[in-house]
Figure (cartoon, helix red, strand yellow):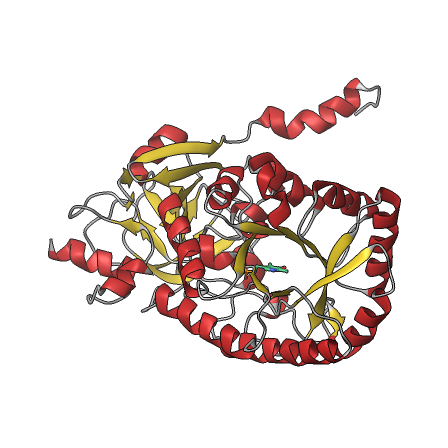
Length: 452
Ligand SMILES: *Cc1c(COP(=O)(O)O)cnc(C)c1O
């Protein structure tokens, strides 16, 4: 029992003090009995791996719903809408789960719009469309679907939107995505709120653009949006960005332009190291910073969390193929690879890795790697790992966001299956790819008279 408690503490909070808050904010994975297998809720990951094979993504629906609830409660005092950032995890079943609980969606492509329409067509009116490069066809589809707002990232895009709206005889609600020139402490690849980044419109030009759009019959200045980056751990940069937005709102009002919505973007980070992360307190701190900055604005607040809702709900379960030694190093080779979860290779991201069924013995320092032919194909380097043998299962934690969503078929590897766990029930929400799925577009080309 002592062993089990220690293991649980390691996974949940990094300490033995499992307070209510730390359980509420913890990962939804635990070892129910000493030396038992890791569970997601009431479901054993070992049994899921047996049923559906590996590598396998497993998500806790309960935690996703709980995290959405944290946002909804933290902003309950004002008119708000949580628009989940689809790109973090675009599984149809997850979109449906969130839509059924009132969420809207932040999309960044026409493809993501199709996902929302497939999962929850009634949620179309709760969609905001961000992204620096929207095509005319994508804009047309979104206008026809009747989305809530286009978050426009340049003047030419606003002109294109007006032209498409005129063509379809549908007025387009837009928000300018302003670039507040605020520094956010995160990985440079996922920082977006500085003037040197490709995102948004320099906030100093926004007033002029709103004024010129006021003359257009086909555009409605609906809101303003800001998104400064991803995996931001402190609430301060969000507050700073929204203070600049707030100043813009006052300037606009003086010109007679009253916006209905402020979109505060997403980006709230989690703790990939486990630590003593408290999701409840984090959301409250974030909400306080947002509300303080927007004091006096009584329109609708839009929020676009992605990672915060789904990251910790998910794990990637992999089977160990080999354990090999090269010189001084020990490599644990899993059947999952960078094509299944690219975050370590792309952002030097950290994912905790735990055995699904712990063995007794001392932890060893190893590299955990996949079979892809790239030295960058690693999940962990010089990491202390509990003892494992070929055939064992390991769980890569906090893999629910930007995991499957960024997966690829590199090395002609079939993408994993995905399972959603709700209470004691687990259901397959995406079957494993087959080689036929992968070859189909090429076989089809050949069938159409092209030769290999
Ligand atoms: C990626 C993105 C988000 C979500 O970011 P998270 O870090 O996952 O919360 C929200 N809004 C926009 C515009 C984005 O590009």
